[in-house]
Length: 101
Image 1: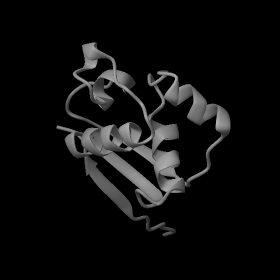
Image 2: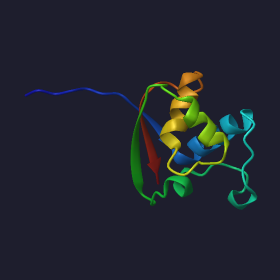
Image 3: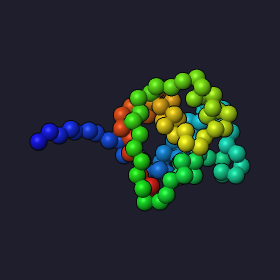
């Protein structure tokens, strides 16, 4: 039987929200008042409760991704944000499993 072993970095969504919020604020991003001045992955990614979401984070970014994020385009941009964070060694590269519990 062929098998493949992979290691995942498991992240609670509350910890993720806090880390992403701090990272974006360090880049000069100002959150709109309607989102309590913080990043919320469940809202921005339109995820449901009791779910898990996998991201392959390799640190590859483009200038356009960064400009879009800093201009406020946060919906469906978590993969780009995670890659940006990895490119600056804020988080580890690899498979990230975000748990919404």
